[in-house]
Image (cartoon, rainbow, N blue to C red):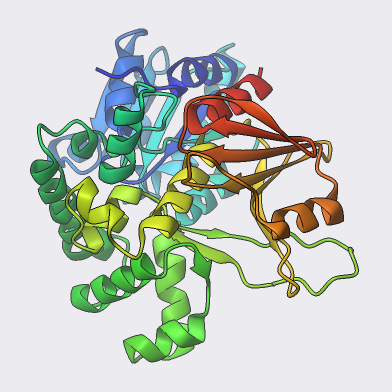
Length: 391
């Protein structure tokens, strides 16, 4: 069992607020984490994909009112959006009786729709958290384990598989299940093969600027449809649009977001890359490595930190720009080399933005200064700096 970084944070949130909404893609480990929390306090667990558990909620107010003294865990809460008004009434009733924390833990596999449903009815009563697949702070920090996390991705069953072949098979089955079973549950009527082709196109385009019109032409659909496909995969927490940083620096700035398939293991499964040797010889290797580092750092960044990239038409570029509450910026250049040297564009971008800290994240293990205020650091070292910044 790998201890999840969010375990202690989740317990603290439940001690502070009546309801916590824990979102994340399917198979990221939400249920396992929730059941671990349930073992630490008096709780009941209901899976809303189970007919038996849904039957218990035929009269939800009557059933849940009998359990106001327990933590109630509702898994796949998006399957029963009608519960949210009921939960609001029960939370208010419990507050009048002096219970104002640790009443409900709601688990869901989609972001915006779920947040919209709960936000309309539970405002002031709920805290939101996102559980991503394993990150580098949760797995062993050796180079071998790091490469394994990069190749297989962070979904627990993929990362912990007994072989690369079994891991790849799990990810291929996961993709098929999402396309054929999960996405239709969210009410989208999209041909599975069409969406698969689109997902593969995004994997080939990993870390590239988002050009919806070009994707639409390649897929043979209109731009509005292609944009809807992107929105869907973003809502399901499978794809990230990394926005460009906009600043008044007197330069022409790139305005399109970058697009990433969030889990590197899914990138490799979509491109039929089954082992490290194949990955290292594949054209996507650089973009895959960049996306892997971006996701790892955003996963461990303190609450409130926003991620961007910076690029000008003149070639100034920062791979990942971390914006901290209060205005500090951290600039991150990503390199696979063991003897990294920042590009001229990174120096130019730093001259434009004057970030508080400048880093080059590379494939080595040591940390050392490079000059011009730049610190060379490993991925686990950078994750540790961000985790420490949260303290």
